[in-house]
Length: 431
Image 1 (cartoon, rainbow, N blue to C red):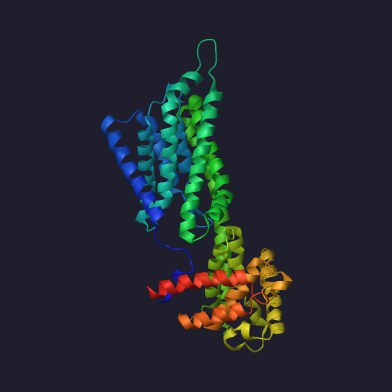
Image 2: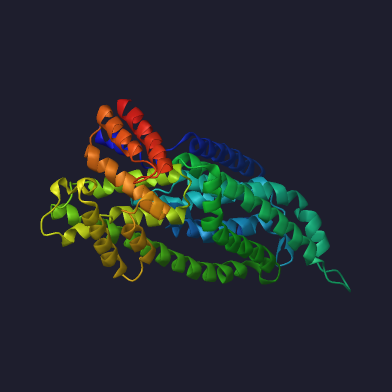
């Protein structure tokens, strides 16, 4: 029962309909591409194996970025380079779009198998998205590859026109990146239950810069193969791997921050200042409200940090508040707790915005606190009143109490967003 209740206020961990559709489409395309390639034979096996090996190495070194986004920059760049290839050392690349898909699929599967063997299977939806994005580019570009090669290759007494090939590459890669971002936003909107516009904005902010860098690397890899032959593969893979290490460190630091904050939030529970699970429940409910109100991903991260540590100031109390319910405490005492908590957070030196959110969580609506502070105030009051109960009447009574104080103590828009979240929570619990 408890797990059902929590599932209503956090993103689903299973596959939704959009993800299943994406995986099925990628699976059918993979079967068709491998079957076709096996029937007609592999064009330029040395080149195909080289690019396939680099794709596999990239999948082996995949990483998870903030927001639980799985990316494989080296693999994606190699796949794009193979799709855009015009020639290798002057020899025209005649492989078809279906061969590109087959090489991508085999490379991805080969790179994913070691992870499966050690119990870290890749996310099928992320892998399917990478495969479909590369396939889209291959089917759009390969029909023009021969004409572009003819215009680009050197002839006696003249040099080829590489600008036309570069322009076509840039346009089609831009279209591919746009389609990939839109698909990612659609999937994320369904998965975390947020508006498509918000999800699209988050994907552009979080994914587009890395996507643009990877796409540029893929284009350069395809062009460099003209003069560097197969040595272009290791030459371009090395800087991408260095960049990937930097991204991995960034993701690790962010994950460490969150783990530290979660551990710190439990201090009040261990000390008996608040009920067990209170900080986690307030955090989950706050995030669900924030998504309901269309907050962006960076704002949601700050909201999560602040919600987890919103009661840290209670450690300064000589005598704990009964049940840790600050909603029942004297307003002056509640403000003092918030200010002391903000001071503790501020001493970390890196969470100043979070400290401000915590400091102003007791402000009235008229004082104009940040949206995150208004959300935490309402979520904290709601959990204080129901104490983690799943009783429908108790939840309705708590919401009614918050509505009566709407416009003064609680933001009416936040309370109504919370009511919608709670309605879904109750529905899931009843199912």
